[in-house]
Image 1 (tube, rainbow, N blue to C red):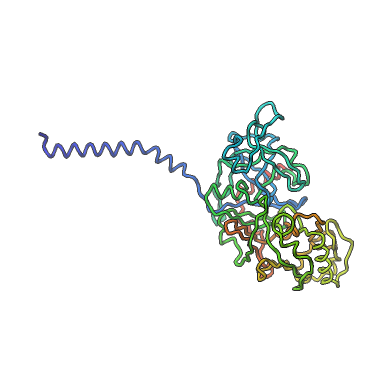
Image 2 (cartoon, rainbow, N blue to C red):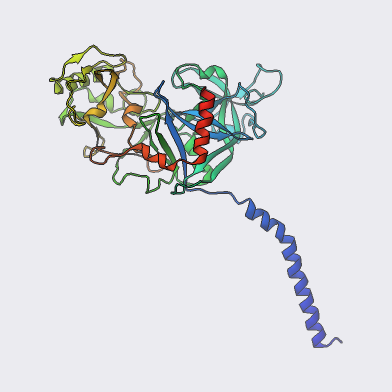
Amino acid sequence: MASPTTINKFATTIFTLVILSTTISDSKPLVHRSSSAPFKPNTLILSVTKDNATSLHVTILRKRTPQIAVPLVVDLNGRFLWVNCDDNYLSSTYTAPFCHSAQCSRAGVHYCHKCRSSPTPRPGCHNNTCGVIATNPLTHKNSVSELGLDVVSVRAFNGGRGVRRWATDPQFLFACAPSSLLQGPLPQGVRGIAGLGHTPVSLPLQLASHFGFRPEFAMCLSPLSTDKGAIFIGNIPSEVAPKTMAYTPLTIGPQGEYFILIRSININNQTVPFNTTLLSKTRGFGGTMISTTIPYTIMEHSVYNTFSQFFAKQLSGVPQVQAVPPFGLCFDSRILPPTRVGAPNIDFVMQNRNVSWRIFGYDALVSARPNVSCLAFVDGGTNTRAGITIGAYQLENNFVHFDLFGSRFGFIPSRLAQPFDCSMFNNFTTGADQLELQEFASIRN
């Protein structure tokens, strides 16, 4: 019979071997899990640049494998991201989900795409894949496109001014569209549209779903092409948000568009008398839509007529001059009061009558040519989709927050009381940003 000392030595040896075996067998998976742990940012940031020729705003994503900078027009109401795949879309990670797959269902697609334009399969041209309808928001032309899946990278915001990490979604869904869809008044060099609408496959909602943060985004558009604005996706950092913001309920249209309810419009604290029922509908015709692809706020014909006449009466001391299209009311800017508040103030009174969005005098006017300033609102005719569509000019230099989880829209109620300049986001420029802008410039030239 073995002595107690021998048994203890044997037990110690077995225990040591078990520990070593476990350590050796687990060492590789442990190292693998640590090295491949996904990066989970709280906030993503996209730089935005205004194109002078079109007044549209352009952002840049990094896409494909190997990754390249892809310039895209920002479309607030776009249902998804689409890019031109006809012109040398080269990527080793591109795939096209089969029709009736889970990815197709997520995109709301029930159409099987067949491609006959190319004898060999390529991005945008496969059979038995998902067919989606991509739209050019400027020409309103549509095209059947292939639902594609590829790598997308966006910079993560860390609150500092140093280099930020890239956050990557390896399975981002988008539409692989034909080059014919890029026709029309688009900025030179853009490759597609970045849709921010309220759909499961829009840019902000896909990224929120992938990285696990609250569905919301904020936007600050710069009025100058020399300064950069920004789009923040995810948690809105306190260091970039204004101290005071006003909120109003946000309604979603049938195609994922963003609507708010404006109850009335005041000019110099006097209510403009028009048929307010045109502003009460938030689905289909009527209501107030917000857009980044319309340069200036558009009003239904009867609303615009009453509004512009009321504005002109409040500025009766300034001579009117011949209108410069697309504007209908213009003034001799040499006679305009020299202060920002010299022209009439405009207030959009929201659903809660205690909340209003004030547009100070000079923010309501735009310089159309030397010595001529025009009311920066446009007559949209009698068949406008919304009673009012707030355009990019009125959004610029205002920090707007789309809280999709809380169904609310936030904005700075008065830029005079709380000055805000989107050029502050130039401070967040990194070397990567500069490289993107150089790539965009080279594409345009």
